[in-house]
Amino acid sequence: MNKGKLYLIPNVIADHTQHVDIPVRVFHLLPSIKHFLAEDVRTARRYLSSLKVYSSIEDLHFEILNKDTSPTELKRLFDPLQEGFHIGILSESGCAGVADPGALAVKYAHENSIQVVPLIGPSSILLALMGSGLN
Image: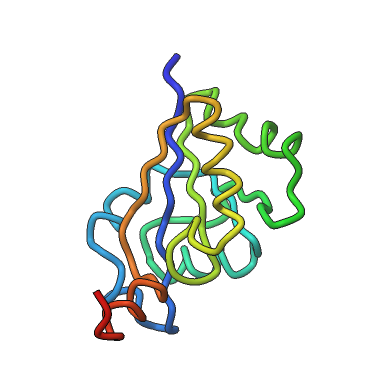
């Protein structure tokens, strides 16, 4: 059986901008992902619900991934990948894995030969660099 992939899913920086700031590719890809890692399950559910790509948020599986997540817990959190399911990581804001606990999961994925697929979206770091005039 093939391993699932780890998707880094962008989130909005400003409320109510998801249909402007999140690329169409993300909307098309999300229905294939039913397992999610997030710092706050409540806000992750709210965000995914606002995208209106799932008929029922209740059918999705959420686990907490935060700065206190241990390597032993990471192994358990990645179990769905071993069964061929994809997992999506949701940051509270911006791009997952950038100044975010998602970096722990990405490191674990690389160490365990799991494909990581970063999806583009808003990043406060890149927006600040772009607006700074620095190159």
